[in-house]
Structure formats: structure tokens, C-alpha cells
Image (cartoon, rainbow, N blue to C red; front, side, top):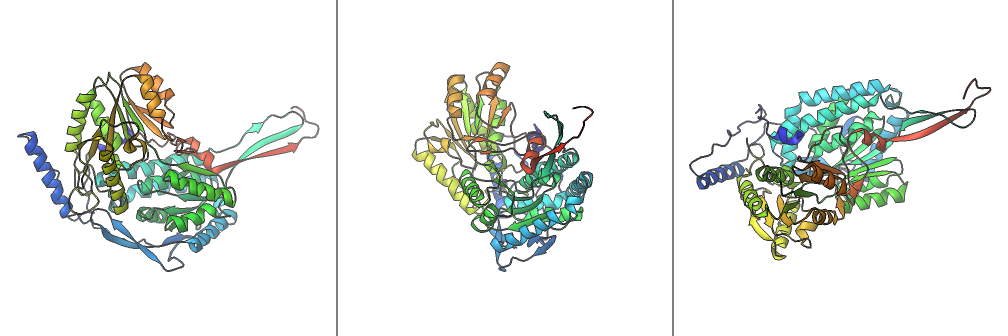
Amino acid sequence: MVILRAARAVTRVNSLFGSVARPLTISRTGEECRMRCLLSTVAESIHEPVKPSISISLTKLLIDGKFVDAASGKRFPTIDPRTEEVIAHVAEGDEEDVNRAVKAACKAFDKGPWPKMTAYERSKILIRFADLIDEHSDEIATLESLDSGKPYEQSRNIEVPMVARLFRYYAGWADKIHGLTVPADGAYSVQTLHEPIGVAGQIIPWNFPLLMFAWKVGPALACGNTIVLKTAEQTPLSALLAGKLLHDAGLPEGVLNIVSGFGPTAGAAIASHMDIDKLAFTGSTEVGKIVSRAAAESNLKPVTLELGGKSPFIITEDSDIDQAVELSHFALFFNQGQCCCAGSRTYVHESIYDEFLEKAKARALKRVVGDPFQNGVEQGPQISDEQFHKIMGYIKKGQEEGAKLVTGGERFGRKGYYIKPTIFADVQDEMTILKEEIFGPVQSITKYKTIPEVIQRANASPYGLAAGVFTKNIDTANTLSRALRVGTVWVNCFDVFDAAIPFGGYKMSGHGREKGVYSLNNYLQVKAVVTSIKDPAWL
């Protein structure tokens, strides 16, 4: 399991941190003492946040190879979710800036050196960029964790290496994209050309800022397109550094343009722009509908969408309960529960339900919450004040509708957007917390009796992004993996995001696929060239 293995890796503490506390030392004299020591240590780390030794220098828009101010001169704050304090003020792009970026992207696609490069030359740029990601991994990981609140160990040991791997993967594809020679009835020579689609508009979310940058930028560049990308207003910093490194790697001016800003202004301008040839969006289903409408009403540009989810995690009666508890815990709580594919509906067979619930509670109580720059911390703060209150609202709703609050349900600490790992039991299908995407550290556990029953219940959702199956029975695994109406089924694993594995949803979780060879189709168009042959020797 790619992410799970990496999450257990030994962390290399680097010189970016001025003063990082040592790994937690936990008493073994009893569970009560153990938990008291653990919680007090983490609470202390929240009140005295680690101060990474990093200078924030890239805060402008990247347009036509240069970092420039927004046309309006406006700037907006990006907030440290650990402290609720301002990290930096970033240029706030709007429609005028999007127009400038699109103009630069069109020029780069039509007249610059980019379309005249061989595919091999493009691949070398992507490989050099991946090498630079490796060289700057500490700095990039620090920016990512500072801006988003995710544990530094996760950023440094899991996500940044995955970014480099993704760009090397697409570098490998760049010179292997080709058409076909097609036989036809008659004296004709027929070939198909797979051509770049043009200027790609891309809008990425805040939960995995740099990974989503890689998922979108990598295949688009491998296919020879140019890009106008909007970052999430909550997490603009790491993409700007990545953009600089891409130009350091040799990317021509205007090929990648990055506009920081807000959805109703910069995002809307990208979705509706008449000179953007393709749109890729990752975010909520609600906003996905808005950008799809804007794309259709402008120039009918094709759209790929990776949207919300409410993924079932099904645990069968033959499961090893300890392993099932650990994997279902990871499936929900990873990245503070801020995953579109989080296993947020935990279905447990009735024969093992009580034991599973007891052990799931114990695991949640052991989860280390605190400053993401502290060694050993598993869970940092939620991304923002808005998201914090949204999650707390769902917790309140769960209690009001009769779900049993097993543990958590409260703010953790006195400062920052921290929430205690929360578990609800005896959750019914009609309850809001089992139907709507919470996007936070809230696990909803419910029981089932039979496989046909759990299939019907798991599929009774407007979402279809992913699912988890935990079983020792290969027949059960095969039955469930084929019956579940989702884009990805993880069997006895979860959140395996290899560069070659396609990812995307069914139903209201979106359409199109990211990663793997399938993502190249998003950024290519097929042209048929038919030439008449005079007096052919053969057909």
C-alpha cells in the first residue's frame, strides 16, 4: 500500500526547522497514564507552534514566464491553520489577469518554441523538473504543510516524492503519443494524428495542492499543451514555487501560467473564457456543476471533473478485526479526513460489530493530534475557519439525528482549527452524516447483515468515487468489486495512488480520469488525415 507504507517510514528531520520537539515519549505503566501523557504533550505543541525557518518570497502571479502583480494591485492573506495567523499576502488575480494569462498561453502555443520542440525535448524538461523537486523537497514540503496544516512527515515523505514520480511518469509518455495508420475501403492512405488540444484551463483544490498540480500539469505538458492554472485561495504557495522550478528546468515562457485568486472571479473567468480549449476541475460537486455550465455556455470546451465522494468501506465477517480497524481508521482520518475519496461510510458485519466498535474507539483515542511540524503527529488542523465550523455543524447534526457519539466531537486545543478524531456508531442510512460529504475527521460506523444488503446500501448514494473492501474471501472480494458503482475499489488496502493507476468517479463524483495513460486522453484531440492514392501497388 503506497501511502500506508510511506506513512510508516522513519522521518528525516531537516534543518528547515529552528526547534522541533523530539518524538513523543509515552509511559507504558497503564493506558490511562499513556493517554494523559500523550494528550498533554500534543496540547503543548499546539500552544507553542513550531516556526519553520523558511522565507516566503513567491507571492505574485506567474504570467508569461514572469512573476507579476495583479492588474488591480489587490492582495489577499493566506492563513496558517495552526495559528490562525497570516503567513503571507498573495496577489489576487481576477478576470483581467486571466485574460493576460490566456493571451500568453495562446502565444506560447501558436508561436513560441514549445510547439516546435520534439516530444523528447519536452520529456527532458519534465525530468529536469522532477530532479529539482527532489532537490527542493524540504522547502516544498514545508510550504505545503505551512499553508495546508497537513503533517510535515506526510508532505515530505509521501506527497513530494509522489509529485516527482508523477512528472517522471509523464515524461516517459511524452514521446510515446502517436496516432495510427488505418486501412480504408478504396485507394486512400489514412492516418490519425493525436494533437495537443491547445490552452488548458485548470482549477485545483486545497486538500492536496501540489499533488493536484502534478495530476493536471503533468499530462497536459506531456501532450504539448499550454496551461492557465488557478490555485485554491487557501493554499497558493507551493504551486508558485513549482512554477518557478519548471521554468528553471527549461519550460518556455507562457507555457504555464498560474493565477492565484477566488472562484467567483478568477475561476469563473477561466471556466467561461472563449480562448481556453479545455477545462479540468477538482473540487466540490456543487462547484463542478457551475464550471460545467460556464464551459458549455461559452465555447463548449470539454470538461473533466474530479468531484466529491462518500466512499463506503466494507468490512466482512471473516476479517481480521485489528487489521480492519487500522485500515478503516487510515481510510477516514488520513489528511485530517480532507479526502474526496475518504472511507467515510464504514459498513461492519453485525457478527463483529461490537468488537470492531470498541477497538475503533481505542484507535481514535490514540491518534496523535497536534502541530503538523511536530514529530509523530498524525493529524493537524483543518484547512480553515469555514471548514472547521462546517465539520462541527455536521457533528452537531449527527447528534441531533440520533447517531451515537462514541468519541471526539469537540475542538482540540484553544488555538487553530483542530478537531478531535470523532466516531459515530449506529448510524442509519437516512442520517445526514451518512449521506453528505463531511470532509473532516468524522467516521460514521453502521452495521449490515448480508452482502446483497450492503451492496444495495453502498450504491444508494449520488456519489461514486471510490470504495474499500476488507475481506479474506476472494469470491466476496470479486463480487463486491464488480457490484460497487465507483471509479476505484481498493481491496485490503486504501488510498493507493500510483502514477499509473487511473482515478475518477461515477455518477456525481465526476467524469474523466486522472493519472495513468487514461489522463492523456483529456489533453489530446484526434485528427484523421485521408490522402487519395493514384494507381496504388496494393491496398
